[in-house]
Image 1 (spheres, rainbow over the protein chains, first blue to last red):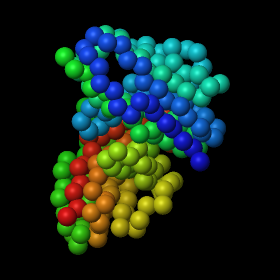
Image 2: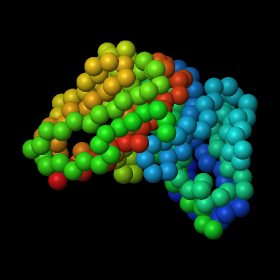
Image 3: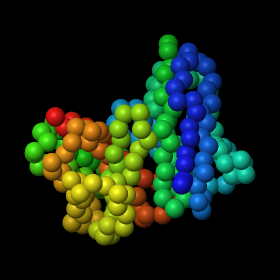
Length: 108
Length: 114
């Protein structure tokens, strides 16, 4: 059965800190790994990763995929209170499977 | 705004009621999805439609009945629900049903079954 596990489930840090969120997976016929940010309702797309070792970057956020070890990390540097959200990892194999999410809280 | 709208945003219904959730996408996509998000559980895929045809039904109870009259509109008809069906119901769309394709989510309908 396809499985996506995110860690930690919850993280509280101070503004300005750097955080690393983890996503490990076991899926059949891997096609892509996606990161979403969910603040109140709708998840919004952050990154799609399909190739190992190539970092995707958007401002203070970056992500990389390791297809050999079957995981991805999402880094956020110089965190701000607006980064507080649930971060979802989803892996596309036979179907798109979501992890439980990491609830990130940034305290001022 | 992601180009996917859902109505209503909040719904409270009794177990004997019949109601419908509506989703509309303005992105010209060919695939639409219903997801259920319960507290402390991963997003659960319920139904997938591709070009108005249902292509996936993930063992969802028959009290949930989807309808896709065209590629821009998706409905979820609800009847005789249970309290454990209370959740956030999210609609999404994508260019096609490939799992390597980004999905755009609507704001969701927060459903409470009393």
